[in-house]
Image (cartoon, rainbow, N blue to C red; front, side):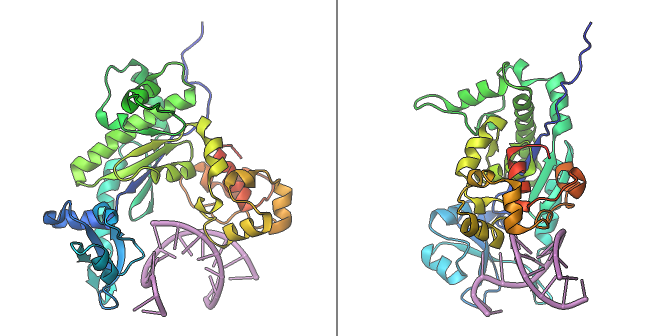
Length: 328
DNA sequence: CATGGGTGGGTG
DNA sequence: CACCCACC
């Protein structure tokens, strides 16, 4: 007689939560009259009207870019509201934003382990919560879904013209023939949309999120649909995603290493990079280029460093494999 | 100085 | 330790 047990599968459910133009939201909560208006937060207004460090989506819509100075922003969008970042001892003081971020973390940390990646970004390990939901309250058995989760984006899910996107998402979330991994992600999406609604209720802040099997995919996904939306990355969509993903979009390859990969190897996408063997990459970049960012996370994948493997190999390959969701 | 100061991590 | 690199 078989005993019910969790399928043996080490897929994790990782979410990356990214606050939408966070400094602006913090200032708009402080001054509710600014809500809905094109707004930007600036530091140091003496030189050309100050440097923009956050821009609301209303302001982006009228052409304001983060690289602008206050004066240029006024030119592009005369109605823009410029708010100064607090100053302490002659320096920009980001503490109010840091504290606001802590409010968000205290909501998010209820459902899983939390790793603060910056003032306005958090990774969540929802593996356990998703596994539990799958056993106790699987989406398959759910009658109706919150509207919020139906607004999720599912990479690789084709929405035909004229068909109802929310209905397609609903079917994806509760289809019974899904792989175990996809079901876990569906549970993750349910949990994340609940968390995002709770964050909004308790802090008045909106955020966007990515839900995937590892940190890097989750981070990529959270930026795909902003503001106030979430994006799911099923394993089956990863190969396509990487095939067209410019190398420089990948964390840690946005700088000089990414440029040299393009020049030395002629690769433009992560898919191109994966064509190269470890040996080839070692010839170009040496055996030590592999481990910079290891040892920095609460998650095994990112925290175990050299112990994952007896051998050294180039950082670019390590990163590319993580994107594929492969275990090292 | 003029996106940019802070931060975190790696390397020699 | 000082310096470089990468990110927000």
